[in-house]
Amino acid sequence: MDEQLLFGTFPLLTTLIFLPLLGAVTLLFLPGERSSEQGEGEGALGLPVVVALFFSALTFLVSLVLVSRFDPENTSYQFQEQISWIPSLGVSYILGVDGISILLVLLTTFLMPIIFLASKSVREGRRGYLFHMLALETAMLGTLLSLDLFLFYVFWELMLAPMYFIIGIWGGKRRIYATLKFVLYTVVGSLLMLVALFSLVWSYAEQSGEVTFALNEIVGNVQLSVEEQLWLFAAFALAFGIKVPIFPFHTWLPDAHVEAPTGGSVVLAGVLLKMGLYGFIRIAYPLFPEGASFFGPYLAGLAVIGIVYGALVAWAQHDIKKLVAYSSVSHLGYCVLGFVAMNTLAATGSIYQMLNHGISTGALFLLVGVLYDRKHTREISAYGGLAGKVPLFAFLFLVFTLSSIALPLTNGFVGEFLILAGSYQQFPTLTLVAVSGVILGAVYMLTLYMKTMFGEFHEERNGDLTDVNSRELMTLAPLFVLVFVMGVYPAPFLGMIEPTVAQYVKDHHERTMTSQNRSNPRALPSGGIDFARSPETPEVESETAKASSGVPSVLVSTAQETLVQQVSS
Image (cartoon, rainbow, N blue to C red):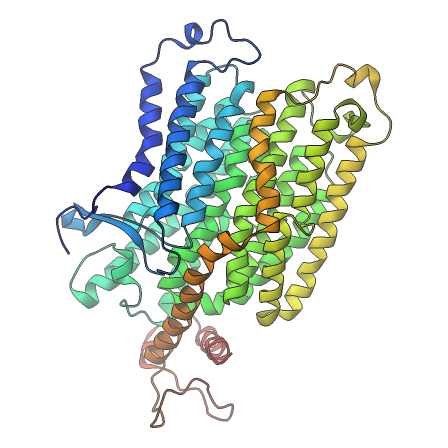
């Protein structure tokens, strides 16, 4: 491994990651917050917000440069940067981007200026709020771009601290409860991932004689038994499943969403939740193909349960923000279902839907924040007939509602269609059940719209309600445009995702086949590889499986049968 800094002509990814952190440090040297915000009017933002906007906008511009130089047909990692970090432990600073992560990076940098523009409602300790938001942006970008497992884990953990303070300090009345629940869930998963991470690296070191955390060197080269893959995949899956969140690890999410300030809810829905599924994509599936193939159908089943359960619970809510929060549980179930189907159509739709969810749900949280800033209540019963009083707000709410329920010509439709079409090839029964979530989604979202925008207007309660102002319109306009651009003309976005996803799916099936042949060696007929097991041939247990005692043999046999069926298909 070259010890020199391999940044090429310019360290684009490093610049992208640490620009927000530079902005956060800059905030610390500004004049006192009270003096910096004196004289703020309705349209004034204040010096801290201007600084945060400047650095987040600059980061967005750097991400646009990255996208403009990105080659969609190159399915390997691009713009790689590498330097030895802790040589004695085999830890390196390795960054890279591919077709899976490029648009998630762009989504992150796109949403942050919008969040800062919407931070007017944070009236106390605003500089601290902006500081933690910028630090969080650095952690999220680092997670998306890391290609060293130790570096990935560092950025993964760094995401926790800023969000802890954002909810715990600037959240609602039950912010302490929501924060502790969020932290406890996340920390438990992270500790399991850490143990599994060191176990994986130790196994690779024993086999190769080299200690390294470099993802590319470990993937496809470490040889693990079926039992080891099952246990290690389960540990990583729990950490990532909590972050998505997958049912039944979702209970922290509604509380965190409801108690978080508006910007916290937007970044949580828009980016942070995607980190869980991204972890499956980047880490768990490439490293443990047999574990992934065994647990894949179970993950699909939990995803479908989450789709239906989240929709039903959302329908029963009386709090607008909690309704949108439970809708996230349902929508992200589609993303999980599409990915674990592991074909190009569904997996491409899954990544595209992650982008769509960040746009439509992020906008809905912004709109809920607009109402709450004016009336300080999120109860559905407190509103009614708003379309006549605030027509522009009602129009925007309608557009993002239709996007959320995947109306054709909106961005949500493209993603859900690809997911359902691709998932049906792998999980026909589960996909048919998942379709009910589309229907339920339309029911609870249109019911919400009907109750709040139509019906009797409460003059004594909402007579002083004002429509969206110019600043709020600026935060929502880019999201509004993307709803239709990504719905009517998705080709540029899909064109960046699809080649890498196609290669990813192919590589996954090849790794699965190779790992299966290692763990269950059999005499193969001359002229090729035996892709399927004859039903009449008794199962031959490998020596590794015989020697292992951590997992029941029936589980191992079931895993191997599942693998052969999937590879055959």
